[in-house]
Image 1: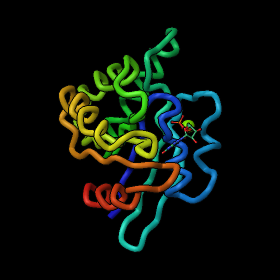
Image 2: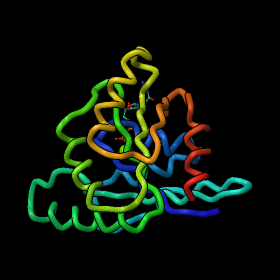
Image 3: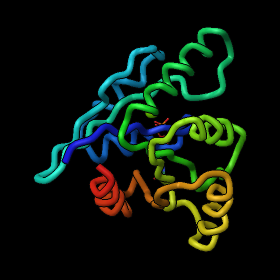
Length: 166
Ligand code: GDP
Ligand code: MG
């Protein structure tokens, strides 16, 4: 099994932290340079029975100028071509305009989307379900996985679910 995966989400939700954890190298950091319109492989995770190729998706946020419009188009095209989208959110900050903007973009692609609720080490478990329900109200996610990219909680579970979707 092998597939392309795109991780999207607002700045600072923990996308690079997650990639660094699963790939075990500092590859993701290197793609945190100024945005380019070219899609890049951020890292490849090779397991005994599956290969996950993570693709960078720059520009999937509210555009500030015309170039932003163009990059948004490129980003949306990338999302159409990958096998799975991981939409990462911050469990602490909750639903904001940035997330709503991304969810609108997701509605124009058919690729399955997982809601990855990161930083669960920073919230009380009782806060999680109401937060998740707010997002599920806006989009029919194929799966919802709460994790802590920093501490590693539930990351293996997420990788298992990704594997099943490839
Ligand atoms: P990105 O902009 O989405 O790539 O976010 P980063 O991976 O750069 O993370 C932004 C900040 O959030 C960093 O200071 C990380 O250490 C922190 N962070 C990432 N994941 C977690 C997590 O699961 N728990 C906590 N407490 N902090 C996290
Ligand atoms: Mg990053």
